[in-house]
Length: 319
Image 1 (cartoon, one colour):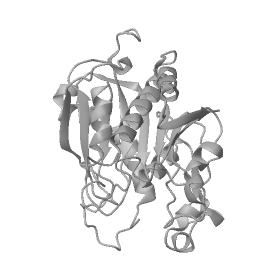
Image 2 (cartoon, helix red, strand yellow):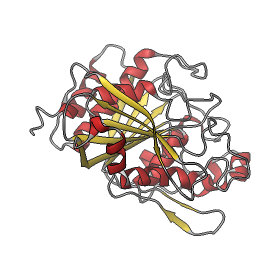
Image 3 (cartoon, rainbow, N blue to C red):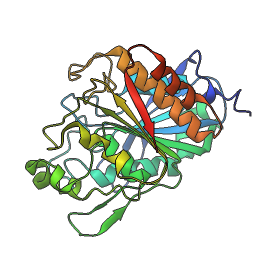
Image 4 (tube, rainbow, N blue to C red):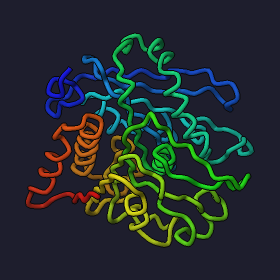
């Protein structure tokens, strides 16, 4: 199928979306079975797969397969099969605080995504409308906030396991491109003391081998004072400190919610802005199309449109 006719290359009218959840993958050895939401366009074949990792936050359901509808709905309507796991860190699971890996389950989160890719056959059986429609050679990952940390590990970032002292490599070679949304930056002296003490895995984050092509999305008003002493610049670290082909979308006035990507009209979004969310939708979708289908002009076109307006919502730079 040519680039011009592939549904993932269509930047025009959205396609109706089928969303199924929970899809349950029995997972011995995990505290609970892995629950997923799968969203896909109702038409089209050879569809690329997009894994979406949720963040944390005070809401009860956004940190689960039920969150991030503004992104999942848009991406699915524009040709991607979006798969959203409920990570063990989700408030919906109410796991005991002494569950191994608690409270943020940094390793389990990344392992969830690899498990999804290992078990796509089961997912297709559970969602018969998907059977035979996935292009397993075109896989991407996206994550917001703590989900951005998860995605960065899958894209090649490393850290030192605070329990064993061993360097951890959870990179996933089947993932060809990524989007990091308000993701954490480097550790060390960039962290607030309580974060380094209570979440020591953050202290050793190393982007120097995160070589997979990635779009980093950061708000220039996302100061995250509960996490870092560096302010909004901290969220740009995954772009500045990683090698290879990378792009940075800076959203003017954007805070940690990036306008409201985690849910429709959610109370915890401090920078509610539908236009900002729409920009994230358009630019992330275009970036992934162009990375997964080399030669597709969607990313270049989207960047030109962003810069063309009299009052742009942000700016893009690449290296």
